Amino acid sequence: MITHRVIWGFRSSTKCWQNRPFVKAALEASHIGARRWYSSPSRVGATGMEEILTRVVAPLPTYETREKSPPPPEANSLDFMHFYKSLDKEDRLGFLTKLSQDFGVDHKSVSELAVKLLDTQLRDLATISQVEDRLRYTLTPRYKQLLNHISRVEGGVKFLVDLRADVLEIISSKANESTHLKDLNSTLKSLLSEWFSVGLLRLERITWQSPCEILQKISQYEAVHPVRNWTDLKRRVGPYRRCYAFTHAAMPGEPLVVLHVALTEDISDNIQSIVREFATLDSEEDVNKINAAVFYSISSTQVGLQGVELGNYLIKRVVRELQSEFPHMVQFSSLSPIPGFSSWLQGVLSQYRKEGRGSDLLSEQEWKEVEQATDSTSGPQAVDALRKMIATSEWLRSERLFHVLEPVLMRLCAWYLFGEKRRGYALNPVANFHLQNGATMWRLNWHADTSPRGVANSCGIMVNYRYFLNETSKNSALYLQNKVIVASEQVLGLVSQFQKHSKL
Image 1 (cartoon, helix red, strand yellow):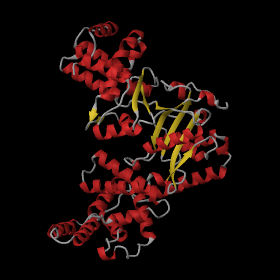
Image 2 (cartoon, rainbow, N blue to C red):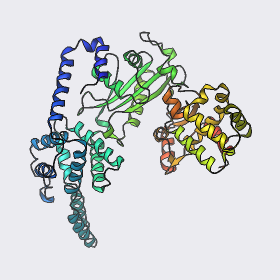
Image 3 (cartoon, rainbow, N blue to C red):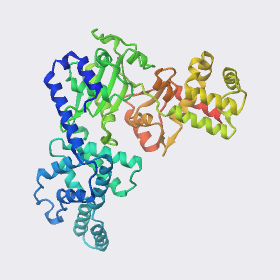
Image 4 (spheres, rainbow, N blue to C red):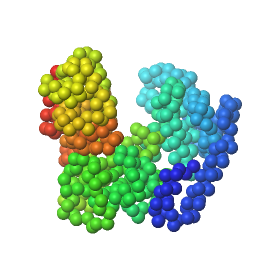
């Protein structure tokens, strides 16, 4: 069903609203979809699921006939798609469970071939290779053929992307702990990684002249700094701004991953100057004022493509595109949010209070300032007061606390980004993304995002990850192979201050 926001979007754009046939068709399509959804049975029995799966999931051809077997009729793929779309959430769980369990790998045949492979180790290489090839083929899940055939019908690839999104939701919610479902997820991810390889993606620059459907989706998918209205969107694709997206021929009109870029004189240290205070809509760009490209938002639009590498390739393609347009440009940097910092900080404060080590986080003078500003006594009460002030963002209303907490929060944030790890890599997902790309952790910016979300997530701090193009390959290898984070003197200095105070 088309939401009020979409209708408002159409009405707010003369270009879109004049296209009445498009709007009428969209509304009619939404009503048809709604009738189909509500006319379908709310629950489907196991027998119905078994019947459709038995009919559409063809047996795996024998090894000898694997390349000679005719493809199943296209109707099988369409029937599977229509049946799945008619199911409610609970029935989809049962359906996917049955598909993955009953139509997966033939484990008995795999075991027999594994034994045979062991028995052939003393034979000639040709015999061993043939058994290995048979084993590889037998490890193919039976449903993989169906998935491949679905990808060839109209709308099939988008259907499979959405199907994987459902599988990921089931796995993350722990609604089903089945290993078979995890195998189905791995199979889907492997197929999608092939279909969405970078060589098959198209780089598109989004402008105000782009189709209104695309502009609406760019607005809808923006996950980092929400678009407020059509004027705001017009700014983000207008002068001194660039918006790029990867698209795929199998999903026309669907941006897969979107990158917003600000063209500036210097590397920006706050987001307000990019998405709030910037008001130029119709001015001509002055090339002499464009020295830096700041990547301030990157959003993946398809949950089902999680884990399929797209964002890092998009940044690299965009850098080449900008270098072609502005040959003199050498400064490339992100201006990134720091999701998770505030929640991590609350955990640290709670842990230090429990262990009676609150005095280790702040200097004696800093604690005195906190105690006076919060009217609390030293020790646990001061820690509790600080936790509450940060949780409610009340510290921003106190000029005294604002200045006292700046060095404290900056060094804690530096440690969170640089020192907190998961399996040796940066705990923060945004940091991990840019460091894998070979960026340098370059600068922490105080009071850089004053929006409610920015204050709640990271106490208003943002970070620049700088892309020194002649160093990105080396930095990426250092990080991925040796788990080394390349950082600037500012970041390392803040980390050193944290270590000094926290006695780690």
